[in-house]
Image 1: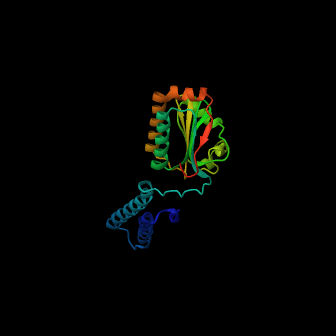
Image 2: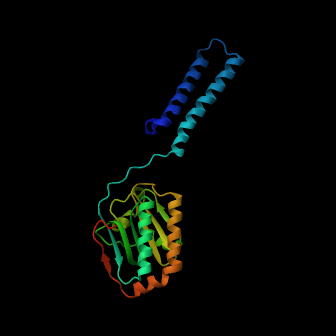
Length: 229
């Protein structure tokens, strides 16, 4: 357990453990136990325990950052045709900001089960919404899968990008979904979740009619060259 802690946290933990052991040895080896020795033992034990707690709490203050997964896929941007230029700029701006300001490796935007936007690392397969996505849509609440290896039904997100460590499923009212795949497990912070929710609310409030028109027109996908994502 101690070896798994970062180096700054191991020092107080080891020092506290050594101090606690020496205190116990000192108490047991004393020829006579008087009140002064007892008081000193109690104080030394408390200080040792406090040192160990400081080391353990260190990992909460400076948590170990998980390593990025080795994800495969070409980087690019896919937008449907037929979107008005202001909406194209909105989707381009929002998706670029998500990929640069959060630990996102890829994202996908669905509206009425139609894929309107893919950006970042692109999977070869099409994404098909499954039980987890449907649950987020029905509940109206985001579902954060912090470590995808632990969840049954994770095969649903192979169409987003194979091998993703984490996925955030953000509903857009009851009409759409924003799916964001992370580079590592537990990589999305509370501020990331708040930003994603705010952007989807903006899409619903300002661009729902334009999204409906694009879906009604049966717009087909148009892809950019790799590396433009």
